[in-house]
Image (cartoon, rainbow, N blue to C red; front, side, top):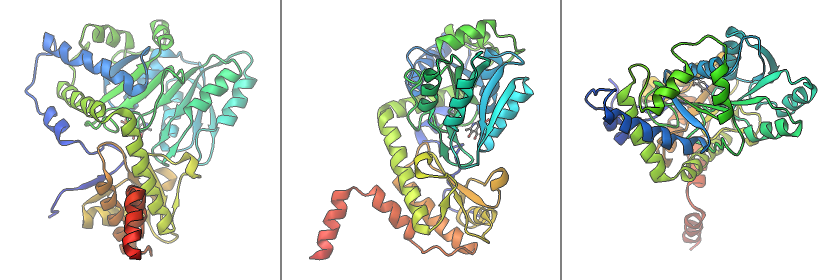
Length: 400
Ligand SMILES: Cc1ncc(COP(=O)(O)O)c(C=O)c1O
């Protein structure tokens, strides 16, 4: 029997704060009554700052991030449309596959897993596209499989530099509400999030934010869609409802989660994610291990993927952490299976939680045959998490 609480360190679903969990537990309600509109409309309003938009329109679809990918494509593009995408991890690969299945003509740039979105290669493709055939450019802001962050702003700058008017689509499923996302500033046309990561809710809602341009395009889009029809959803939302039965308890959870984000302050949320992630990265260095992210400059603030040492199967590390220590780590996906494990560090998280994850990972690594010094990762993270004045005070006490 497992005792105590589970340590959940997968990069989504994330830990649900107690007040959000309580908010989810509500009696069923009439979703056509005015009370439902009074719940939904402020949620749609309060999601806007999370996306960094005042001009955009936020739409919720029952489903997950994958459903939101489909809704994004089906509502704005037509079969045969050319789009520019990169493959550099499992999620960007799956998005490419979906675009192909939906009949888009996908120009794919392959880069090694561990690299960010290839902005320079995108820039060349855009500059060469003098006929303007590329209708949209897709960026995965945070590749959850590799723990790599990509520079959305730099892609916008390249689009502007060559005067290309392709739409800019961003998968922010594992980044939005955890790291800065500036939809209006970066002139993103369509951004995608899910309820179960930075938004600290259970899975079940795909969250889309669309620019006015994307909303206009949706009116004349020709790709078949029914359940994910944006026009139907946007019209219903304008009246405070859904065109079909909504997951009302999830919306109560979302209300509580948005209140938490507002109370902490979004910039503080972003700073916290950066600080916690920096501690995890310091631990990886102290263990003498290597991140899958090819450089610190592109390391994600929401998830860290870590190669195990030669001869140590990452699946075993994950199984030991789970079975002996009640600690759940993210698996290595695709070609990283057995070679890497992931620590998710997003959502409702603090220093103590990260330190316990790092301590448990040290034990699981050693139990699986790796030789990492006990306490080294924890100590490295503590040094990041402890403000310098306290360290200095400690140092002067030690010197006395
Ligand atoms: C970056 C990214 N995009 C898309 C998805 C797919 O989302 P979902 O599993 O909610 O369908 C995920 C899931 O982890 C993800 O991390």
